[in-house]
Length: 309
Ligand SMILES: O=c1ccn([C@@H]2O[C@H](COP(=O)(O)OP(=O)(O)O[C@H]3O[C@H](CO)[C@@H](O)[C@H](O)[C@H]3O)[C@@H](O)[C@H]2O)c(=O)[nH]1
Image (tube, rainbow, N blue to C red; front, side, top):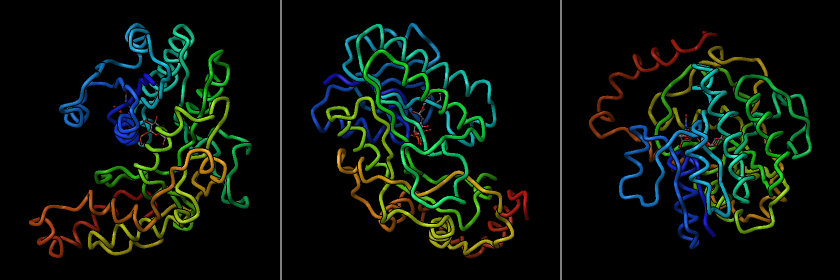
C-alpha cells in the first residue's frame, strides 16, 4: 500500500515508518524541517518537508496515497506554551488532512490520546472505547474536536487513542512531571509497539473504529513506579511526595483486549520499556562519574520546577 505518514520523524512516527517499510508498504514521510527531524531523517527517502497548516502542500502529498497516518501535531507541554499555534497545527492541520483525504479518495488513521477521557481515577479501571470524553485542557480539547471531525469524514477512518509512549531520548525535567499524582494509574506502551500497531493497522479491519493503544496489563502501573524507576536509574533517588499534585490527572489503564486481538502489537512489558528508556537517556560516562557529586544540586533544580514544593 502507499502510505503517507505525517509527523513521520516524531516519536511514534519514526517507529511507524520503519515498521511500515519493513512490511513492504511504500511510505511517504511528511514533516516540518526542524533540527531534530532533519537529524532523524538523515538518509531517508521520499520525504516531503512542509507544514501541516499548508493546505496546498497537504493536498499534493496526499495525492495517490491509499492511507494517511496522521500523527503531525503538538503535544503537552508545548501545547500550553502557544495554544493558538497548537490549535492551528492540531485542529487546522487535521482539517487540511481530512479535506485532502476526501478529495483523493484515501483513508485516514488519526492519532488521538487517552487524555480525551479527562481525570478518571474515581472510576473503576480500565477505560473503554465507549467511555465519555471530557475536555480538561487545550490538548484534550483539540483531540476531542479532531475526533469529531474525523468521524464525519466521508472516507474510511480509524482513531487510535495512545497511552503514554516514552520517547527514545531523555524527557527534560518540566513542571508537568509534578502535575501527576504519584498514585495515579498510568499505562505505558513501547514506541515500537505503538509503531507496530500503526503498521499492522493499515491493512487490518480497523476502519470506522476507535482503538485503544496501550501496552496491556503488564504495562499498567502507578506513576510512582514509573518515575521512581527513572529517577533511580539516574542516581537521583525518590523525590518527596509533597512535591506532587494531588489534583486528579488524566492518565489511566486501558481495555486493550480488542485492539490487541486485531493488531497484535503488545510485545514489551513495563520492565522492558523502562530498561529501554534508561538506555536511551543514559548520560555520557563522564557525566555519570560526576553525577554522585552533583546529585544534591540536580535534585534541588528538579524540585524547583514543582509548584507544590
Ligand atoms: O507544528 C508542528 C509540530 C509538530 N509536528 C510533528 O508532529 C510530530 C509529533 O511527534 P512527537 O512530538 O514526537 O509526539 P508523539 O509522542 O510521537 O505523538 C504522537 O502521539 C500523540 C498521542 O500520544 C499524538 O497526539 C500526536 O499527534 C502523535 O504524533 C513530529 O514529527 C513533529 O515534527 C508537525 O508536523 N508540525
